[in-house]
Image 1 (cartoon, rainbow, N blue to C red):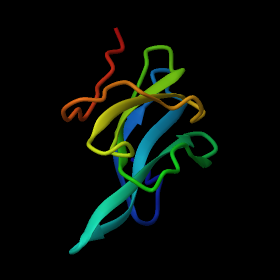
Image 2: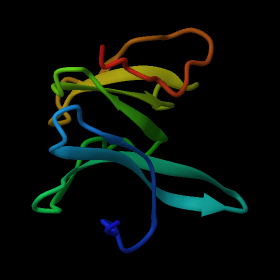
Image 3: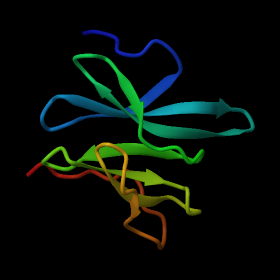
Image 4: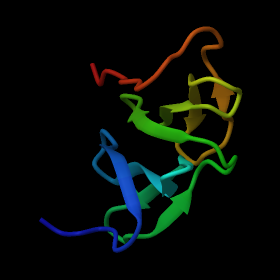
Length: 111
C-alpha cells in the first residue's frame, strides 16, 4: 500500500479500466456551516501528477469510468440539485445527463 495524497480530503476514488489513472474528488471545505465543495481530479499513477477536471466551485464527486477509459460520469450540483454529468477523461465536454429529481452516485459498468 502506498499513500498517493498528503493533505486534505480525497474521496470516492475510481481506477480507470486501463489501470493508468485514478479519478477522485478533492473536498475543499467541510465542517460546521460549510456544506462542502469538491472538484474531480485525475492522477497518473506512475508519475503521480494531478490535473483538476472540474472547476465550478460546487459539489462534483463520485467519478466513474466508461469501459474504454475515455469518459467519466459524475454527480454535480452545479445546476441546482444533484444531477449526473459526463465528460471526456481530460475534463472537456462536460455535459449534463439528467435534469429532474435527485440523481447521485453513478456507477458505469465495465461490461
